[in-house]
Image (cartoon, rainbow, N blue to C red; front, side):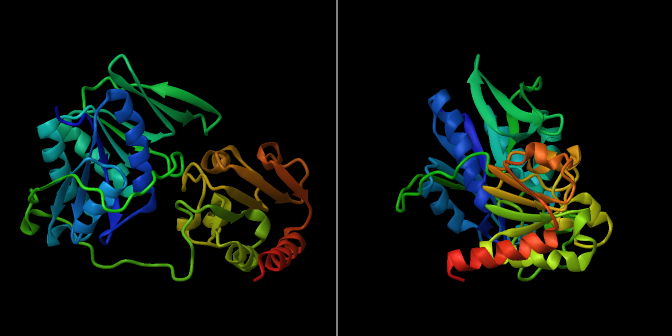
Length: 328
C-alpha cells in the first residue's frame, strides 16, 4: 500500500531549511494514526544529499527531482513536478513548512490537483478517515479545527516551531525514486537574476530568541542597542510594522499579521505597544518580555514579564548583565 502521508522538503541552494524537518515530525504524527510510512518529496538542484538526511529523520521513501533548471525556486517548474508526482499517487495529505516558498508552491499546485490547502497548522489529527487541522484564527486569539471540502490530497503548511524536529539516526535507509523535471528552461517565463542577502543578521525565521523594536525606538539608530542584545543572546532582530513602514529597518524583520509569524522560546518586545496585528505574529512565543514606557500598553497583557521604563536604559543594562552571565 502506498504511503498516505507525504512531506515536502523545503530547501534553498540544496540545503534543507531547519523547519523542513519539523514538517517531518508533523507528518509522523499523522502517519502513526493512519498506520503507514512517510514519503518525502524533494525538488531542486544538487539536492541528492537531502535523501539520506530524510531517511535519517525517519522517512521511509524519498522521491527526488534533481535538475539544473531547478536551482532557483520558481513556482512554475516546482509546481509542475509537484502536481505530477503527487497527482499520480494521490496521498491523503502532503505536509510542508509554512515558508513563503511552500505557501506559493501549495497554492499553485492545488489548482492542478483540485485539492484543498490549509495553512499555518499547529496540530494535525486523523478523524473519520480524514485529517483535521488545528490553526490559529482572529490574530491568534482562538484556535479552530478545519477540514478541507476538496478531495485528497490535502496540502497543509505547518507553523515554524509548532512541531519539534524528530530525532536523527545516521545511517538509516529507504526507497529512493528519481523523477525528471516536467518543464524545460525554454518553457519558463521567469528567471532569477540575483539574491540580496543581509550579512551578519540572524533571520527571524525559526529563531529561538528574537529582540524586536517598535515605534518606541525612535529611528534607525534605535535598533543598535537591540542588535547588541540580540548578538549577545545569539538571537535575531525583529520589528513591528510601524518601524518597518517608517523605513527604520527592512521588511524582512517584520513580525506580525502582515510580516513573519514566529514562535521563539524568548521574544523581547522593546518599544512595541502590542497592537492585535503584531500579536498575531508572536503571541505563540514561549516567553514574552515587554519593555515599554507606557504601563497601559496592550503588550503587557500578553507578556509573562514586563518592564516599565526607557528601553535605551534597560536594554543596554540587560546586554551587559547577559555578557557577564554568559561569559562574553
